[in-house]
Image (cartoon, rainbow, N blue to C red; front, side, top):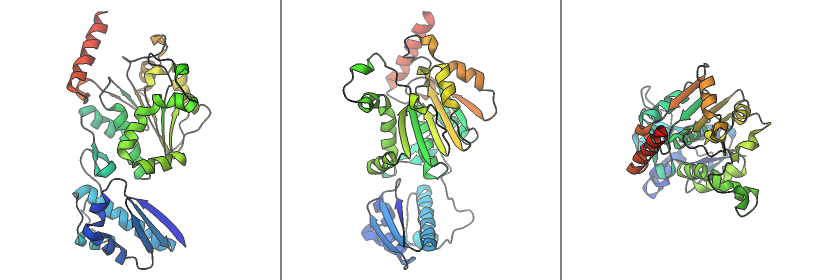
Length: 316
């Protein structure tokens, strides 16, 4: 007997199972040869491989329909679980939603360049996203990666940053190497916690399906069947960026984000981000999205702060 575990990662269990589990019981009725047990956002099914495949397909249809229409009825379950779908029935969202996060939270492309990043992701295997703080470059990139993982377009998510101090000294931080490095990687954890349930994220990290590591750990690897994000790339040298980009395997998507105005290297001239973007952007299969002040979606003051610093630097 084979077992299959399905996660409702972007749907409220109450919405999916229905009041008093009425929708769940309807779904189970289609698969009398399977032993099906639901606990919160997990559904475990056991039985023959062919029946499990049928069940997984049915659940996938229900999830896709819910993502589009934001509701499920008994009639929907009876129709979709049986595969009785109209040819023109939507299977995916046709709007600016990238992925549904915890509790069904819709994570959308909210600005012009965020939408452009989503569009370019569909056509390019390497994308550079450049622009100021607060524009959602990293958050949008991670949403695209999680969406690709949920669609099973990739098997792994790899997120990395250069371990460069922003005023503080790494050696004086408490703890072992992991403890010292985790503060640099925390923004990546924060985004993932919005998009994956904590216990599921912990499992994926333990299984090394989701990897959050410093840039130096990329050396010598070939990254395949993965969506790979390099964040804070302005703190990488030309040599480090070349090392990272040449890790790309045959079936991989790379997104590189950076802000040339926030270089933390001792000598700002060491940053290889803008140089790398300039020498690679005309190569087919590589895309560049340049974010600007219009894309800043943090507190309204952030836009004015960024503009003020830019004016001051221009005068200097």
